[in-house]
Image 1 (cartoon, chains in turn green, cyan):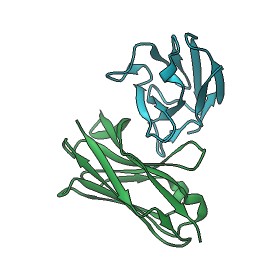
Image 2 (image 1 turned 30 degrees about the vertical axis):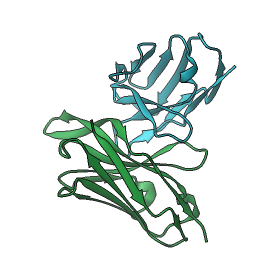
Image 3 (image 1 turned 180 degrees about the vertical axis):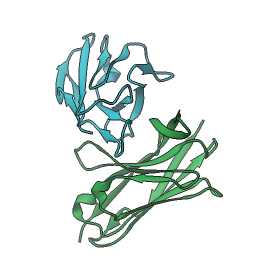
Length: 125
Length: 106
């Protein structure tokens, strides 16, 4: 049974960089998209972006080039960096696994079936 | 792609049949998933491919629809079903979620 365990700094100042890491235990790292989602206080879910084991990424244009998602296959971990933080980036950040399905020669995300525990992040001066 | 869920809030009793609608701003085929989230927890997958029940999810949950209109139905609401429900489209990047439907006890 796959388990996702995430960690990272929870209190940051405006203009600083958020760094979060998610470790994957119990199953293969390949064949999935590894995803970040966030949820502002009292709000809905926002898809941030994803990466596969080969390093292919897709991200949300709303983050305007501030986002980097990376993968370390030797450790079965993937990471998020979000630069130039603002108060609106305050949220609970979740990592998750996206099951994939074939679309021609590509694998595309199909649903999110396993989630990390969430990391609350507050951006405040 | 924008997903509009309705209602955003509903009050229901144990045993009630509940239907939540998710409308997409363009055709997404059947690339839709439903999640349940309880306070302070990560979401749990209920339905994928618009109508396929995730392993371990009770059969009182059902999903239907394709294209732009989808529904999540709970045939007989149980106490543990009071939660917030989200739809998600996985047809086109950026992947998006609906605004959520909070189901509360009447």
